[in-house]
Image (cartoon, rainbow over all chains, first blue to last red):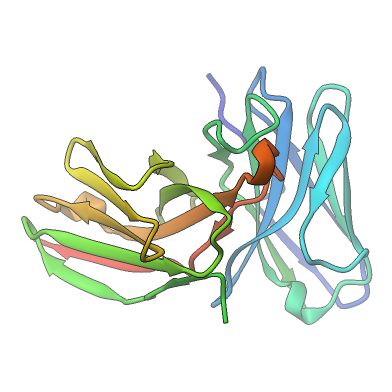
Length: 114
Length: 115
């Protein structure tokens, strides 16, 4: 069974550009979560999507946005990139809309903003 | 003050040692407690999950939760070089039976087990 897949693996952008990160959850999982792992800051919760709807978002500015498609895959968009957006962006999925179920993480997209 | 505090280490131990990893937290609403292991250039994988005070054992791993002291621990017995990774504690609030889909993580402890 395929795990959570994320693309691209690495992404290099310049300040002010937009970045689009993609995530495919495990088959049968309806919830998708996005986390940011910046150096020295640990994993920070970004967004939670379930059944196509945004259910919760973390303490991030509105230029971080996303969506979930009918096939439950998800996209994270970061507009007006800033240097401090450089981080590993992790996507996770779970069976139901609660993290009480086991959360499966992908290997992440390493975003570098120059 | 961070909601979850975890000593980042790094921690270096010889093979076969007992490893103790700890986190403290300040938010009384945290009900669920998890330990994740993250290898370099990989996503975190769930090791242990518990929601009550006390001990939970799974093979060489034991998770301990003390809600009164707001303190959780992970013990690794007979540590192996393959245990070398970053260990992250994570917690979730489920106030009123509602999930917010959000885990709050500690910073992670870097563990190296040398042969």
